[in-house]
Image 1: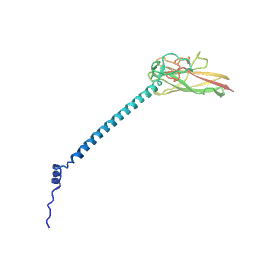
Image 2: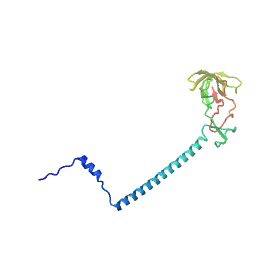
Image 3: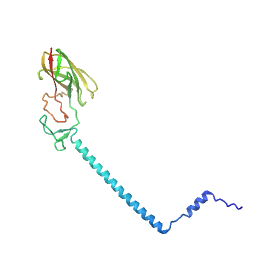
Image 4: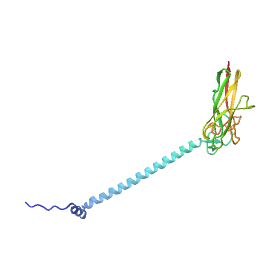
Length: 213
């Protein structure tokens, strides 16, 4: 029996590379035509995808524009409290500042109190550009003021306050306002800077209670 000499793999591989299989002319033209059609289909698909992305981007821009037109914006002209306002870039301005503000957490508004002693408490804050110097309370529509005890925290945190009060029988309105180291305070007129979204509005907080013994 005659054994056929085996050709090393590297030689076989190099020989295969030297003698590539060439398809017949007809099939070769058909292959090129398919390749052109494939490239054309891929280009059209890429254009459609790019167009879809652009349309989505424009829709998102419109949504963002409409939403930001109503967020953190204040009317350029004073509004009557309770009125509607359609925010837009032509009738409002952006405002990211936080004005000085104080609110009363206790007693609750329209609460009925049993007894004449109550501890009013709440928090005050601003945007941190100045420190909260004091919180004051009035029981006579701002004619006189009493300073509350202030528990100081970081300049960007809520400043807790409290003030023990002795109230006579009947209804009382507690007004609280904060004062900072620059002399800024809250207006007693709640119509100043009023707007439906409430941005930059910082009127003095009012709480009405009914004391019954």
